[in-house]
Image (cartoon, rainbow over all chains, first blue to last red; front, side, top):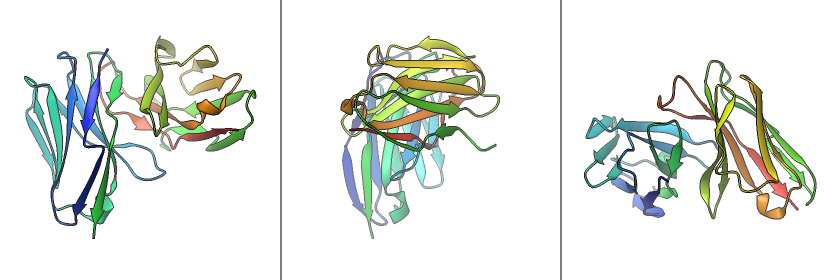
Length: 111
Length: 115
């Protein structure tokens, strides 16, 4: 089955710095790679996603890159703010409709 | 739309008791998922329905867990009998469109504590 590894498990940055979270996946047939943000006590919510026919996607301070050959994808947050503090999950999906999530990264942005 | 609605938000019960968690997906969404979240194991997919039919229940931990979707607007996850290790946040999520369409919309979750 699909396996998704996520690193690091915790990440602490100073406000204004960049944060990068990396994920690898096992199944080369995976074609959809979303990122979810979960604030403390809240539900996970989609922040950005990328499909396998695209190498990079950007939305304001957030970007995601995908390397299909190496089977890894990354989330980049620039100019981090305290409200970016949360747990971030990457996920990968095969041709069906089931997402497999990574273990999560707890991001702390220090003011 | 109010989004995915789950109940109860919090449940505290004693070991051996039956627990029923409920979910109302977003109207028009074809797919429904039950996830369990714990610190140790993260987000685990328990079961997935498409058009009310269970497609994959390989994530259901054991026979004490069962899930149903009698119609397009309602699903239940039942644990009988419950055990302390079942303590977790259980999320229901729905997704629109045909298979492979993408975004999951999560409910607020049901936090279960089994004493």
